[in-house]
Length: 321
Image (cartoon, rainbow, N blue to C red; front, top):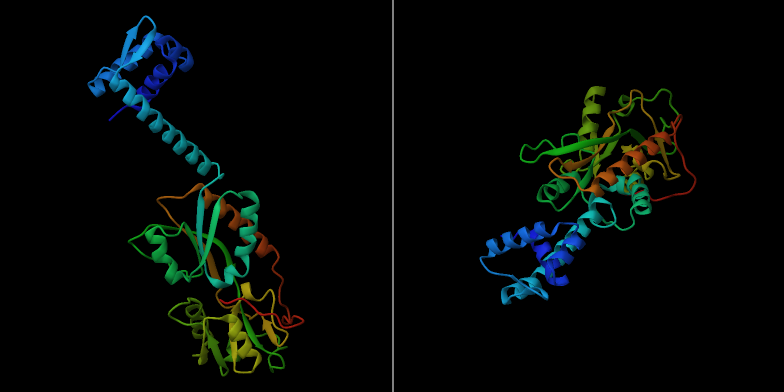
């Protein structure tokens, strides 16, 4: 295999037509240039340059190597420039997966900040629940993924780093006019006889959190509907089909015909984490992680206690889970 440093010296000699001119251009001594050419000829087993009074003259092998060597060195320069662009975030790409309620709340805020700071990075966002994102992270299809499943990365076949961003509180949602809408204090056990709407157990870890909270409150919930779309569930809440627990991520804007209340004691919150393979992290992924941490801090700082319930004017459709 040719030594690229010697190839560079050889191409400089061929380009300038003399050992001394090449030495001056490269900042070498002339004997050092001669040694590099001699070593390259030893590697190839061919004479590449002949010394003549008029300067360095290439042999047929030298002309061939010069034509090919220029292309090789140009490609190496391109690769080095692209690598510098990646490390400096003036290029490259970032592939991020998010579950739906994060994609309708904190992720757009992070995307805006990231694009302002790193506009030359190609950013792609895909919607994926944790159960679907894990195989894609394993295969290298994703660089990072947001999850709300505390058990998500328990997988010995892949080393995943989980970085905690925030805890997403769970609140009770009920129709306006519900007998408990203004009750103080309000506990989960007060809703033991209510019909409940829950997320699907196969796709969403929120149901695991909810069932654990119900067991701790001393009752087994009666399920009226299972659905993975929180906006649909809140529509059924407004229609009086039952009550549901909703994460704070989807309560910043709510329907006027639904009351959202804090519970005492509160149910377990959803841990919101970002996951990345531990063996490799691009500069773009590290930059997005910084942005997500910043946005998460701002999101928590803007959190307002619900006090006696949250009612918003107008009916605004919430994002899915």
